[in-house]
Image 1: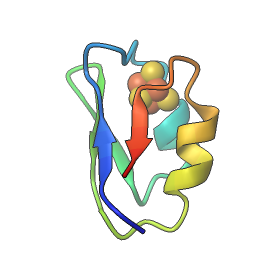
Image 2 (image 1 turned 30 degrees about the horizontal axis):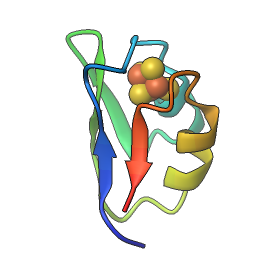
Image 3 (image 1 turned 120 degrees about the vertical axis):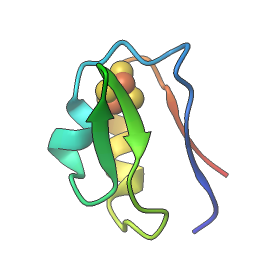
Length: 57
Ligand code: F3S
């Protein structure tokens, strides 16, 4: 697994990433932030995001 990144310009704060993968993401001021680079559910969270704000490099 490479680096997890949240594009805050694209994030609309829908919380799907946190709901899908709470070990990997947390909401801060209405936007998602990466909580753990080691979260195994990051792919699921990226797929769940409606604006493709999450990238896995
Ligand atoms: Fe934002 Fe997408 Fe998560 S819109 S809150 S990064 S599911």
